[in-house]
Length: 253
View: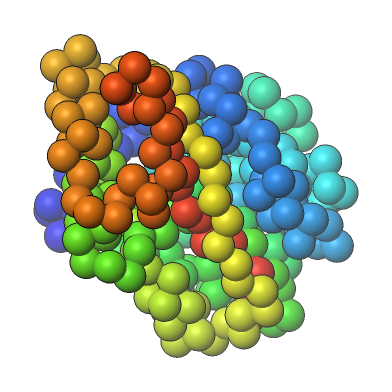
């Protein structure tokens, strides 16, 4: 329990320090995936965005027509950034695995590219189910790991090397099982590929030159099949970009 709490505090501190960078990050502020998640919630009246980061998804819900949107994050600086950048949002600092809202408080819950930082992802799923009213929508997206053990290990090792707050990218089957166990009906589930520019990806966490070299070396030492699976693009022998796979799920409570 203490280890999980310490991990959460460290993550909140690290992300808070980089709030402005996340606001400007192309990976987070634009994309068909963002539009899709917001579109799934466009008929909602009361939306909750969990682990909002700099607020892009919460802002997209407002733009989609959701009347009231609450943006939550464990990092106070992220909540401040989100509410300043997207007027009309309500901000709450809280743990994604212990949401401070009554049961059936919302008719839409979103969570985008954040759950790989959660020590207990099933606790988040249970909380999302609890705060949603019957018939409510969960719009969820996160990085996912391949079924191949070696490629799974490569992805998660590289992510932790880049960002020590990374806990784990899980597999598609795990997420579907957890959602169904919590009482969700999975309406849509698809995996999309998103190209990641290496320099921006590393800069988002303010990695030192030494850590950047270690990350680049890990790509060079990737196991067989990784270059094809993650669609490496190299320039002058150095990794320039790669493709990350993300699961997008629309589920009904």
